[in-house]
Length: 289
Image (cartoon, rainbow, N blue to C red; front, side, top):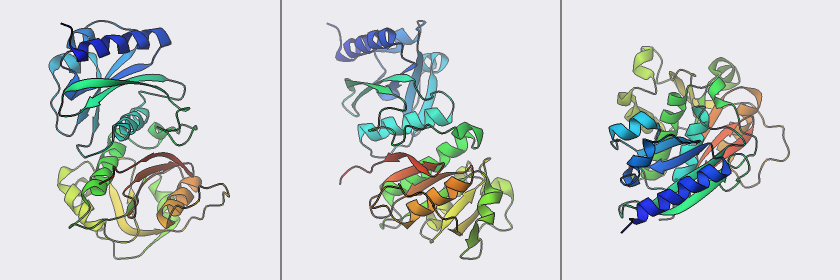
């Protein structure tokens, strides 16, 4: 008898071939019955999405691109948003690409959903139809590390309390010029390698400092320049969505006048939003309790 996973996967492959998909996204923990099709050549790329420290087989690595998403509780759409956003940042996807996503219920181990997404037109996934060129200004691994920290903070909070913060990545000299320090810079005097966002030993320090008002300023290479920074750039656009807080307005303002990318964690909702060019590019909703 054909397994459910194999049956769903075969239909997804047929759809991807017929629509001319750019890639097929498959979650690693549900790819057990799909390894044989990964060894074959297709008209589309194969992207394996892993969670946290999840292991991936040699067959999957050799034939697929790997996108890692944080191992935190999110909705299915939330995981897809993260995977697509990181794929865009890494240059794997661009506006106009068709993606076929295979998802299922984690823990039960079977696939039950095929989702086809037109990057740039699917507003449930991406808030803005204008896909920014994040690759130009920020290294993908730096963006991914910041996004992971923000999502972990959204899921876990700090010391049992919700937190909200902003990470501004790239174009740091101009960002520093358009902002002011609210507290003594806690990163001043430390070697760059010790304050790089890619350094796993720094993650807990970042999370601890997230309770401080203001933003983190991070270079495109991942060096944390400062924390507790007040962003001074004002947003001049009149069509910004209503109901968003001061952090979102500040992130929109600074990204409208610099080449930076901003990642905002909302204290009130736990949602994580990504800003570029003064607009929300994507918002990842925290699942209901």
